Image (cartoon, rainbow, N blue to C red):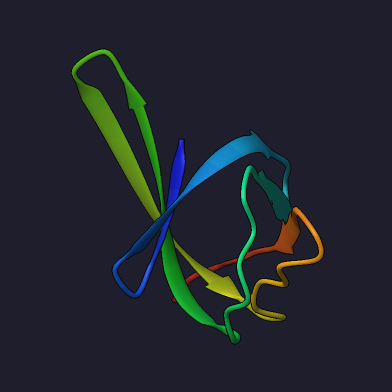
Length: 67
């Protein structure tokens, strides 16, 4: 699973109903992003919002549906 945000691709370790845990967090402001889940040859993509952005100090990233 990966989080795509403005050309940046971050590996996602875990996903909950309103958050994800990224493996290597970076500083990024609030905005739109996409979550990608790939299993074998099947890929699903969801548009999400990052209402609080991403902090390099915290692997937990709040997400909201829609973009």
